[in-house]
Length: 105
Image (cartoon, rainbow, N blue to C red; front, side, top):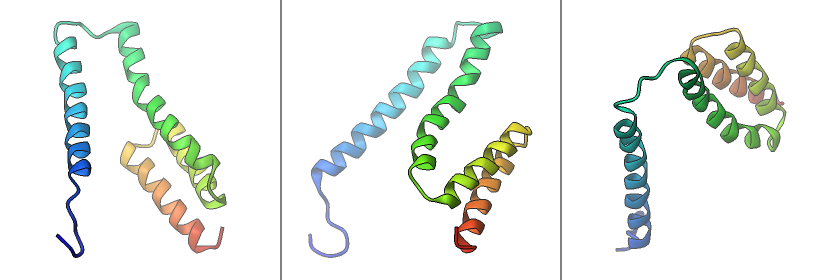
């Protein structure tokens, strides 16, 4: 198959495998935790997981890119620190990085 799109079976198998791994991880968490009452310290620990994972993903990008991305990350962190809603925080980051790039940072 020549042209714009070509089918590579290894890519297809990798995508299917990643999808299955993601689905299995999500469903197993629901199944394992269905009988557990989540409160107190366990709730606090589980609430801390998503921001921790997000920081682990974002930090290398912030540290290894230009000034616009670093300044936008600071603006986004400030919005999050001020307890802005998630959508507002995301928009602050997106708008600030685009604006700072447009200004030449």
